[in-house]
Amino acid sequence: MSGKFPAGPAAALLTLVALAFSSGAQETPVQSSGTLKMFFTARSSKADDDLPEWARDQFEDDDGRPLRAVGVDLRGDGQEFKFYLSSVPSKSGGYQWLIWDPATKATRGLIVGSIIFIDRETDDGFPRLETYWRQGGEMSVVFNYTFTRGKYARTSSRSLTVPEINEYFRTKPPIDLDQELVEIKAPHAVLELPLD
Image (cartoon, rainbow, N blue to C red; front, side, top):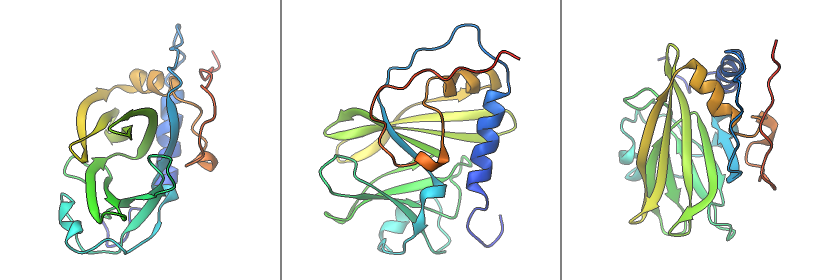
C-alpha cells in the first residue's frame, strides 16, 4: 500500500455494487425486514485528528498517519459518536473503523467493513451494525456487531459468493452514495433488477 490514504473508496464501492447487480437476476426476490436506518462508507469521512494517541492503540495496526472520521448520532439523542477510519487495513484486509465516544472519552469497539449499515434494532440502546466488504477475488464478507458490555463486538460473520452478493444487496435499499448518513424513513421496497 502506498504512503497515502486508501484511494478511490467511492469507485471501489460502485464497482462492487455493479458486480453484485451484474451477476444475474434471482428468480425469487428476498423481502427485506425494513429495519435499516442508514448507511455510510469511507466516502463520508472527513479529516479528523482529535482521537487521543492512546486510543489509536485499539487499531489492529496503525502507522500514525492522519485519520478520517464519520460522525453518527447512534442513539438519536443528539450525541455524535465518531467512527475513525485508519489508513491501514485490518489483518483480514478490510477497512478498520474505531468507534469513539467523545462525551465519555472512551472507545466503543473496532469494526471492519467498506459499507457500514446501521440498524433500527438496538442492544443496550445502541443500534446493531452490519458491515460489508470485498475480501478479494469474487468473495465478500459480512460482519454483524451488537453492543454489549460497553462496546461493539462481532457476533457473526459470513462469506458471500457472487450470486450471494447479488441476493444480499436485493435485501437493502438502493445504494445511493448521495444518501449516505440520510435516515431511511420507511421500510424500503425490494430492488427489482432487469431480467435481460
